[in-house]
Length: 314
Image 1 (cartoon, helix red, strand yellow):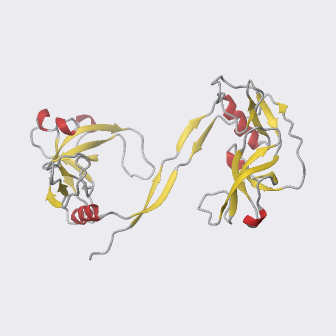
Image 2: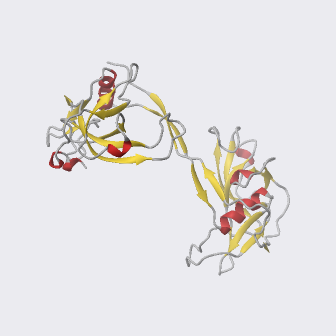
Image 3: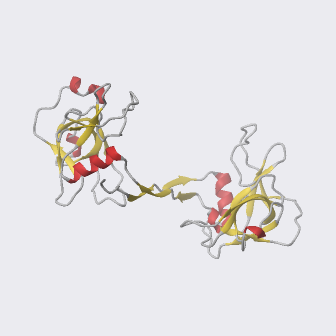
């Protein structure tokens, strides 16, 4: 039996968002060691603040300062912190209702062990030494012996140099192990061949193969070699350069229906100006010397495919 393939994969998409007046005041306040909530028409103080009342959907603007101490409402122990989590040592995830607030804030609690954590325990904010206007300005919570007043005070939300936008990192690290069908597909690619699998019921050929027909729900085992040439069915022009790709913009990413396949795959189009790529363009793969998959597809010089030949694959 061949050795199962396995490889680490990272899905990462940091995105930039602008902040409205409520979120801007909240994050700027954290930079200044001030925690702000927002008061609803019913008089409840929501921390973290939201821009619209979750009950009435009315816009909320009445900012309120709450205490930096609070009470744990519920918790869960994290024995093995992952990279980029608030603490490198085991800690508790806690929901903390800050004094003066009516809702709870999720963050980390620095505690020596799960036996030291309980619902109802008193905690306080430990501020990060360097603060930039982000939720990480709260380094974590720590146990606290004092009582709370439960009172809040109005705040105008005005700060010098307010935070108006943030970059939110989104990253998922995992190890991917393909099944039988995709392992055969990847093995064929290493030999500069492209194989799919045919459904025994509807006879469609799927590339990349999935191990089962998504339409009929039956297993696919018959391998079919397709391509290598194909037809551009749809495409888009990419104008934003990716940090991890050494490709100059603009360039074209396209869906390509390989000859003999009933499912279009996506790939980059090269060897032609981006504004000359079109639906129906006939293309072929370009392999690098040590590449395990086509680097890109280029025009073959053949006449464009007729629309009826690929319209079902759009």
